[in-house]
Image (cartoon, rainbow, N blue to C red; front, side, top):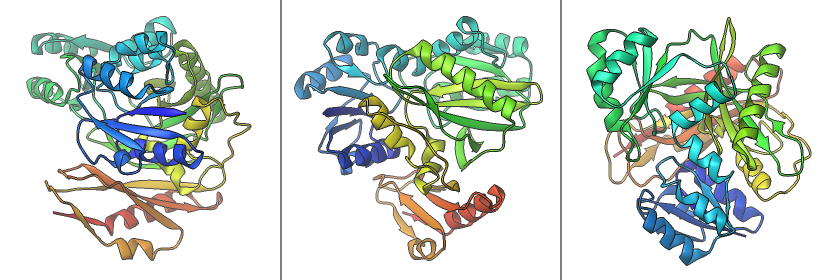
Length: 386
């Protein structure tokens, strides 16, 4: 099959590798040259994916069997037309449209499906933001409706933070939607990602829950399995199945939850492999998240997902701008036991840009805290240089 991959970052790169291992053709698309997935794809296109006519052009040019979105900043309303043309959109045009916009997915989860979420409001101006903050209370979190990797996200701790939060959200917004969501702060004990695999003709499967820690709205480390009670896990699985069924289609969904003293809260959902799921590259499962996504969208049956090892991933971040980043410490991280790593191959760097990950795994009897600590030490050994 020919796959048109819209977005060519590190997640798209691993997906492309998985696809090529079972004989698929991938055309990688992004708005800059030499993006990670382009380096391993069969072909590539450089376009502005918010330009609907450009999207139409490359779809007509390549005539793909599958369209696989990897990022949010896409003119997703075009997907309905492509489905009508007989092209399969992953997981579905509806799923891509709803999940690329926090407003659509949050209203679906909270208002239509009745899932427990943080109290929230929307704002399209700084004045509306002030009103929304007063309604949900301080502290609260502000996010652009369209963004990824924490861009534009901030926490309001006092009224003096409101104007700054508005400007930061607008600057960090992807796409042409100037609107934010304001969420009441949820006092959570931990956060998890539940990778949920929806199959066309077979049961929905769940990966072991993945714990993660964020800074600046972006994940810094993730580990599998995460500690969670049986009752909370059952509730999270029930919520994940409910929302993925409402969205339709097949594929892997990254469903995020807050675990609190009052139970499980739905947070966000991505209709594709999740950044926190890169921990599965450490061999924690019989299939990593990219292989699972691929098999589900190709309607290849997945009999079961088994947890093989405990593992952790920790990001390797850049600290400065560079047009030609290089890496020091590769030989040091390579010498560590039970450790692996990925350098994504991004052609440029900027402060806090994710350039790679360390990966550590051990048997399931090893305390997960020890594995996370080893992964943090490993990531610290690699330095991104300009």
